[in-house]
Picture 1 (cartoon, rainbow, N blue to C red):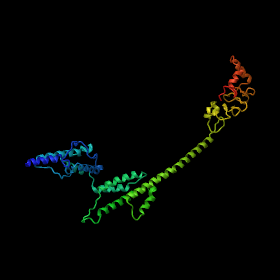
Picture 2 (cartoon, helix red, strand yellow; picture 1 turned 90 degrees about the horizontal axis):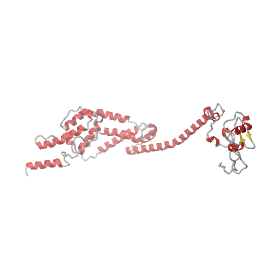
Picture 3 (cartoon, rainbow, N blue to C red; picture 1 turned 30 degrees about the vertical axis):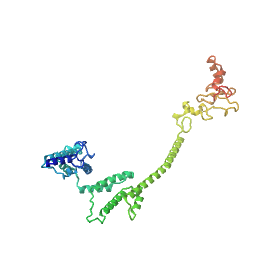
Picture 4 (cartoon, rainbow, N blue to C red; picture 1 turned 60 degrees about the vertical axis):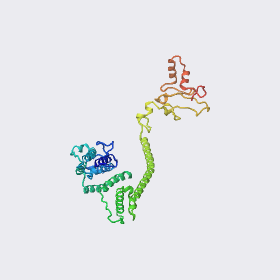
Length: 380
């Protein structure tokens, strides 16, 4: 096999091998956003750059971004392969930038140059960013939120700050000092203090004092568990206390309404509990339930005599419509058990009945008084 053939074989392997940084799948094209995030400026550059670097590493293309895979100068075929991958990366970077920022970017052929240009434009100085993050962590308070929501906000700040935190590396042979483990334990203790100090003092002040008074501060996972247990306990107690308060409130409202009804007095009938606009006596119109109360007839008089079936000889009285103008105008025929209409005497009433035609006074009186308990058609 000649050198040229060997070179072609090596080139095909480099392009088709999925483990090669030169490999591009059929689904790769310049217009996709490989990280899912869009660069919008200084506010999210840190998050965006971290997501982009993670995506480039997953595709084994980070060497093109950081400049470790340099552009070939001699071999034309190798240069074409490099340019193919580089152009794909430039397309991915431009797609991941907000359109309002993209118009201000200078087009660059190298993915490494474009990456460094974006870093220069939007990366905030480490010292300033560390100060901002520490200030945000210090000011992060629960403010009545659930513990899970408060912890989520605080953890986002911690994760951002960890990207700037310097982690010392052990230089001793075999690492017998456990430097890394000690540093991580110290960082966890700082996070525990941040978490406890941001809790609401009214709800968790006592628990916080008890935890901080311990000689050996528990791990953060244990502290978080203790705080969430206290939150569940408080919610349960609060739910029990709200029920008696609701009942007491309802009782107070009922008492207030009852007192208000007692103060209301009708100016027409001089009775309490209603106003003149709702007075049945004045309007002469009574609701159906008014007559369900024993002892009430229409207009507040009359009613039934007797208390049930088979007891004596009860007779239903005639209905009195409206309120009589005076006591002398409402008369009762004791023999027939008939109450005549208000404003008419017995003789006047019978005279009116005669004007009605062939109707007999007795039959009309029977209709007005209704059937007795002994009648076959009694339905009462």
